[in-house]
Image (cartoon, rainbow, N blue to C red):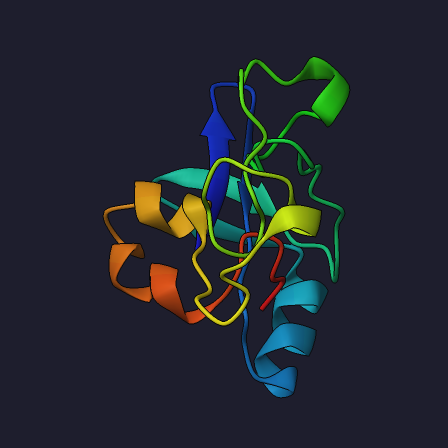
Length: 110
């Protein structure tokens, strides 16, 4: 799953079997969309706690409203009344993952 990409770097997150993971780490690189990406075992992805977007913090966030990480509505997670109805705001914006948006919340790492 591609997390973000710009002209200066390529970062993708892959969930692979352990044997393939070790092989990729040993090789040290993968190619995605004709772009060479370095392989690391784990990396930190900066995520905003205001809008739950990536590559910025809540202090740098441009969103005018707080988005609930559980249901995706415009309220703080402490005020959420839809805790059983999970919704990922990031997957809802992705054509590739739109169908999975109702299966997890916005801070889910799986």
